[in-house]
Length: 224
Image 1: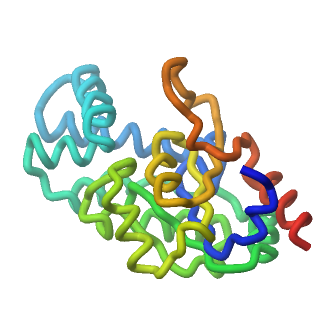
Image 2 (image 1 turned 90 degrees about the vertical axis):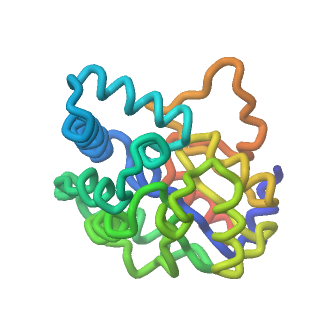
């Protein structure tokens, strides 16, 4: 996809965890640890078994939460409140991110498999709350996680997003496929914790970067 298509972008859709902040911030491992603890307490099983089940549900259903809802009939908000009760102070205000978001014309949204409260806590710590027109969280998607296609359509409809003039950023490449299918431009924000397997198709990722802020700065400069 040519860079000139970026000049048509009116809506910017960002994943949250390990995208708007780098994986090196080590925030998500706190959530991962609490998911395991939740399963240990729920099912009264050893931690190693809980961890295996947690990852099995993630790969099978898209999120651990979805697996627990379908197989153990848990209340999703109980899970979300528990796993997002973490120390957000490991994040610091990101002045570069704040500055480049201010230079990008159009609306900005967050689309996350996590909770709105967690998203608010993150963007407040990063100092970028003022830029976002909306947060589309797992509750807004009826607890159906990315990369299931239906919530992408709901996101677009709810916020009046024209996919051909929208761009989505994600650290998990599979989650970009439905966005690309709708007609969005996509950017895979790569990091070592979320690689693609050798047999996986990543052709739906129009742009690749391991530095979100530098990528945005380059495009903001080009548009100016």
